[in-house]
Length: 288
Image (tube, rainbow, N blue to C red; front, side, top):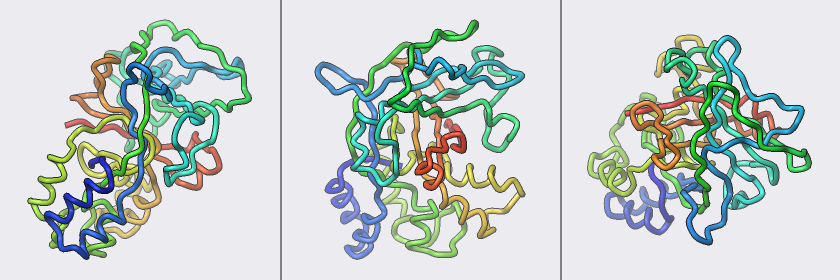
């Protein structure tokens, strides 16, 4: 929902919450790596757009029946301040993010979490550091996005009070994805959080900055694929089993516009991340 320093979050919380509630809320913050356009002597940790460096044996990702995916971003794991995060990122190698963005069919086919047939329209690849890789030309019909070098900084991230982790701390059993009777759901506190930081931005790890309802709930609904209501405890349990791997916002400098100024999200189960099973990452996108 928002990002900033722990001290800034503490100051904000103490303005709207009782001290003991503020302390409890602060413990739910998670560190994330914010990615921003690099300037001057900034250390470059990745980039939006451009062309990916793929091993010779790796084919450009394709959604069968639709065509090749567009290359969104690359992140150099060794350059990230991964030790500051609470997810088990690879210590080295490169993460590559691909998405079927509609260039080839004028947006006719959509990649949606709830549509299993479309899951192949978004992909994460990890290229190990010991594999030789070379820049790969884009397939015919795809125009690469302009390259924007990225730098990184670690910041704390907060999420919505109706996120399962926060709800379970303050109102166990309250309806999933809805406001409940507690000061963390007060309009004053919610307004203060949005005013504190309303930019989605690009990010690795931490709490996702969802444009709509928590993206974890969208992923849980898709994975269960059973029409579970939001009152079903299975949905809450499943939503709590996913963490943000990466999010990429719309970005003018890279000529990226996801829907109506929306964002792309990749989530993964911690055990799959630790085992480097990036093929099990799940994708969703949201826009206003």
